[in-house]
Image (cartoon, rainbow, N blue to C red; front, side, top):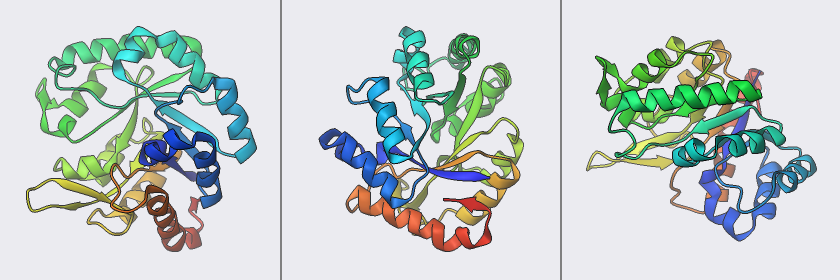
Length: 256
């Protein structure tokens, strides 16, 4: 049964002001788990104690590409202490992705280190992986062709697949069996062509089709994320989970 979590980047400013209080609020809103991106100076033991207090599950962690390359053992050990195997590459700068073959080689090395320790490496996309090409494929498909599934799993940001010009439902189907996590995000396209992220159900992304496809692909977690919020982020994530409860909980397929 697919569970619903929150990518904590959405409430980054609140976490910086009050890390413990913000996590407690996220739990009160009804999210089952959280995906970290920063630990705000807390030890793994401190974070784990807070997770136990709130009943939240650590889904995994987005950690900077350079930090993973330089401090892989420490990063892996930290997330394993939180009870999660998932360590995720969240983003590549233009410089970092100037050579996709080098990225693939680094991901193989990181994936092997994760596998040795009992962790799982994933890669989280933006739209540029769908727009840039390598080896005759989108960079997205190229990475997963070059790095085997036992070394690299998929965290598909379905909104960015859509914004990149592809069908996220089709992409979910293509990676079924290699796709434990998705990001669930909505957007409105602006006059200049840019994307404004919005509360779930307020944009143009076909979330219902994505959720159905994710269920069929045996995705473990659908992770709500809103990169930028036009109103207070905690209000936005509250409205997003309410939308999920209203639209999907009655079907019995989504566990919130």
